[in-house]
Length: 55
Image (tube, rainbow, N blue to C red; front, side, top):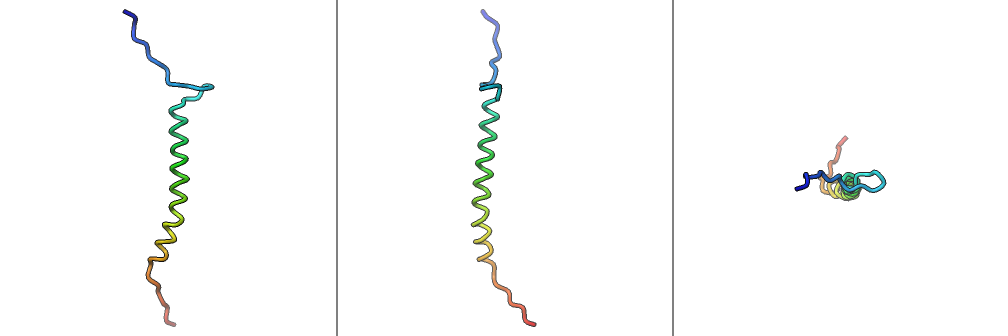
């Protein structure tokens, strides 16, 4: 019976594909978070009660 072998992770041009995919997903999640944060901050600003300063 042959000895068990340890498979190397999938690579392309020397890059670890799992790590590359994870980096791309993290980048996409960051971009979506930034895009959502703008309108969320705007809605939060509109929801705040107005304050009037009497001199």
